[in-house]
Image (tube, rainbow, N blue to C red; front, side, top):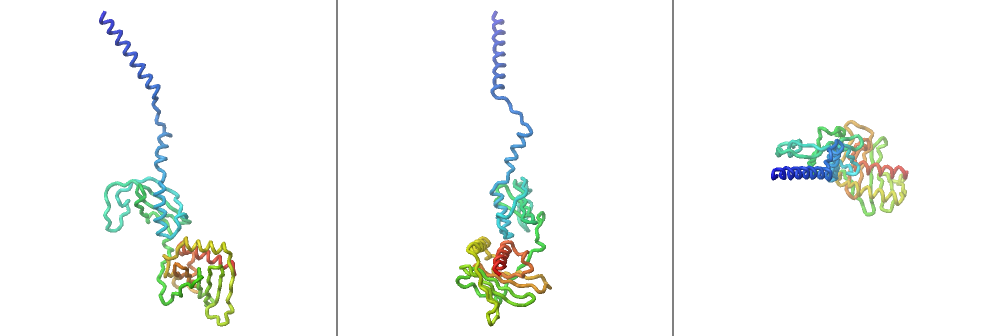
Length: 276
């Protein structure tokens, strides 16, 4: 009789345990790891952090003079770099041998492409020059303007000045923009002052040009000259001055000037051509 009770009790316990397991499975069903679910997790993790993007743009802007907002990040991917130098050691540089998680970032501007390597946070960024495609072969090499050839500084009321000389005629002209919008042009050496002209630009043009000068500070180009290629002839040499300093260039290399300088020159040419 005792044995029979024991068997009945064991059967009841077995059924109860089975029901508990079934209920648990129904209450907490296992979600299968589908391919889509697995793919979604890395997608979030593989987004380029804004701090990394900003660090790359700022570094490249400092190297090229191109405004950070004009630099487009067209590709990026997670990478594991072989050492603390991100696989790009400088000469005689000591690199830790630990693997470094980070990013490979591709930046473009017009027809130029730069490839960067960074660590995970963006606190370390390195330009991969071997993988980049830039116009370095056409890059102008500036030279200091001799002190004896520097023009006098701007006087009160002047915002910008350009002195052009050379060309077929070999004449020298000085064009000055005043803070009231007057644009005055004279020919140096004109005893009768017969070539003098005074025009007025609009307040909007004046404000836009002043903002451009503030945004593209020319102080980094102060005292530098961008000459014409050796053997060139009949070109015009232009010396521009602002409150940030003086820079000189040959008109035939204008399109190869550093980007901030080129933008100022283009805006200035638009102002002077519109008022002629």
